[in-house]
Image (cartoon, rainbow, N blue to C red; front, side):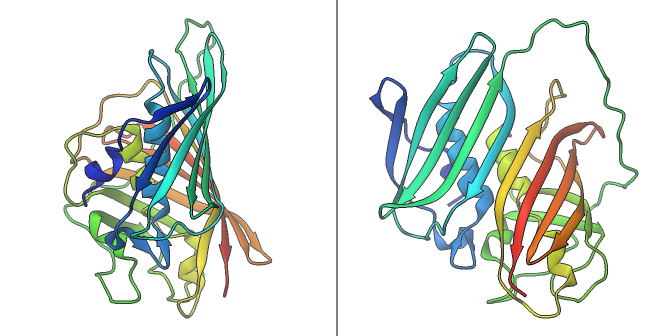
Length: 271
């Protein structure tokens, strides 16, 4: 299944005044990441479920996801959306993926209407990397490379291949969909940003489990329109790592070198 097919989830059924639900969703094995579904596609699907309930000009301001437990592949699961509060300017929702009675993925989304304001601080952070002509990352290696990576082009400018015992804990480079989707939405951007491996994997000598525990995305508005075939620049660094957990931050730019999102993750490593 393509990213467009997975993100095109059926309309949710209203189950109470503030809740909606969709059942029998399935993520195929080609979108696998070890024993579970690729976190980017599950987060993108939860966002899509929430977005169905937005009926005005509110745009996504922040999106926080906790990966509670494995979301198994080729196995039906449900998503329930709950409206926490609908304010005049800001609305807050949660989305919860459940499978076989177990909690798998939980997200909270904040949408806000743009307003006139005398406060304005321009973002001036840019990158100095040159846009690549093609991807530069590891090929599909059975039982080593996550299957979902077949859907993305990653071009590393700085940082190491996972499990090569590097001393660095950064990733600088570019990303895009290998086959451009029909159009780019926030759901596509959420899905794509998570395609990068955790910065700590390059420091490990041998393949070992690692997983994102929590992930926060903040979307910068306004920004220029983006196209399905665009390269997006990415710079991630590790703020701290100890006791089997790492804390990373990343910045994402569009093709015009303007920041469109800020990402923060807590990652568990089992080396």
